[in-house]
Length: 137
Image (cartoon, rainbow, N blue to C red; front, side, top):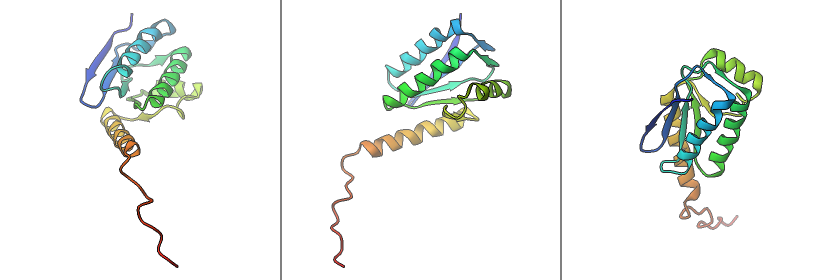
């Protein structure tokens, strides 16, 4: 059984698994929590892995796919507070370069807020670069 501490803020939800080892048989519980965040408001997720020493390869693969899904749905998925032993393991599994990772939860908050601003700017229809005709040469 995987216990996950959930902290919902205005712009994001923080999930903090409370275990040293997330095994393959716990991954569905963790993914279910992730899906719940994606289907609610706010749908941005910070996965705080402080205290987690080990993730089975199946779990890191599933989380990589989940991160992709969040970004496809215009939501942020940021991982923070990775312990050194876990970081080495994730590097060997090849997910460190793929995951959106910050050293601290505070920095993860900043990333989510910056990505929110980016999405708002990109979704805005009132910005047009065609309003100014080119100056005659």
